[in-house]
Image (tube, rainbow, N blue to C red; front, side):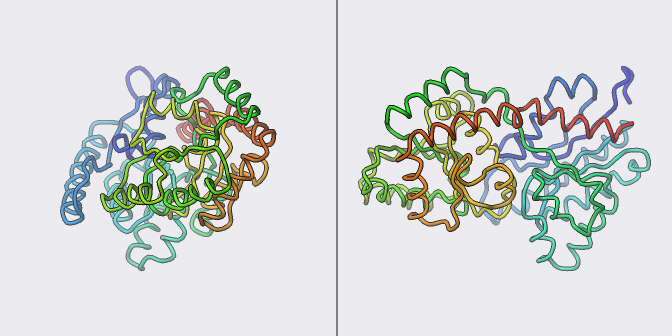
Length: 382
């Protein structure tokens, strides 16, 4: 506790850059006025800040982890921390890092609480496939954990048999207030849909093959053949130059320049502008660590229908034919059929868009996320 009576939280995780779901969530929480009014927050960042080749990345990450552990030792030495809050990993390298973190703070856990947050959806797969050595590391820090947070009810089962169910809490991601689109803009967009205007399709995520961007690109010629008036904007960063080259080559070969645009990595006002004009968000993901993509929640709040997969915790948010389309197989045909289903029935599409906006305003805004996290922090800092 600090001199002004505030409890102390040490938040150990990833902070931007780079920009991805967990980093955004950590930054949102650590900078929240509601959290800062009640707690003294100490940020410890373990995110790599540079993209290097695979040979250089290993020593770079080791140096980052060494520096992070030294910072954490100083935090433990100089502060009476009430809660250690960790964004846990689900990889062998991450298990080693999380074990080092746990052993560094272990003595302080005699008085402090240990809360871990799993922002993905593949922990169980990792745990069951890894070797005994890394599994024992995970068991070590789970045994010392007071609370595990997951993103949706479906993901509670990830920790079956590893930690008592009463210690597992559900907190959905929240949309940053800076990404909230004005109500009148959404109303105008939904009205335009009923006038059979051009359908604006958006892919907003990192350009990773398992996120399904390439299958969406391959659906474009099928949409043209079906006579749909559409355009697709891809927004996100490529992980490799070869993927970007292949993407651009496909556009050129199939003469899609008038219908497909690559916007690169977008943030802030540029991202908001895309959300303001788009009607259908497509994320046909099989990405191993997918939990509850913030991009889906942002698109719902912006009055968009969703085309996605039953992967991670997504089906706790998206219900087929209710607020979007869940495709069963990630193929260009299935994606094109889902878009055609929405585009051909504009009243159905407009109804979904309005419903998604309503649900997001009631459940998935920054204020909901922060308040749910505060309830947990308050319960474990008494």
